[in-house]
Amino acid sequence: NAGVMQNPRHLVRRRGQEARLRCSPMKGHSHVYWYRQLPEEGLKFMVYLQKENIIDESGMPKERFSAEFPKEGPSILRIQQVVRGDSAAYFCASSPGDRVNEQFFGPGTRLTVL
Amino acid sequence: QKEVEQNSGPLSVPEGAIASLNCTYSDRVSQSFFWYRQYSGKSPELIMSIYSNGDKEDGRFTAQLNKASQYVSLLIRDSQPSDSATYLCAVNLSGGYQKVTFGTGTKLQVIP
Image (tube, rainbow over all chains, first blue to last red; front, side):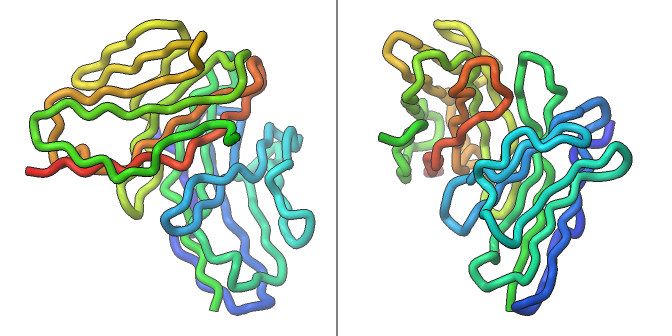
């Protein structure tokens, strides 16, 4: 049973470019969460999605960031016009969506903005 | 007041000792509590979940929950150098809602 998969594992972008981060949840999991972690800091919640729905995006910056979880395919976190401050590790987690909201994390995408 | 609070550490314990990690949370209706371990440069790994008051044991790990006092703790018995990591406490603050809130983590160092 494959775990949560994220790609790419490392992504380098220049300022102003777009970054697309992908997340495939564990088999049978219908809930996806995105987090951002800066070096030596905690996990910051960004967005919570179910298939085709954004449930909570209270942690997402209002501009340049968007997320989706289509009916088919992985969840995508998109960052437009990246700036140096976007450099961080971005983790995706999934859960089965029942009462027990244990979340299982993918390996993360390390984004570096030059 | 932070919603989920942990001492950042580092907490240093000698090999073989008991490491005690603590976490307090702000919302009385919280129902689900989790401990994650994160090695440097790696992703968080779920090691314990607890939902009822009292103790829950799994191998060398024991989670303790006291809802009245709003704290949850993790004990690691017979600490090993491989236990050196950051331990994240996570709480489902809103009761039935799926979102959990993470503390900033406590860094544990087990000294050989």
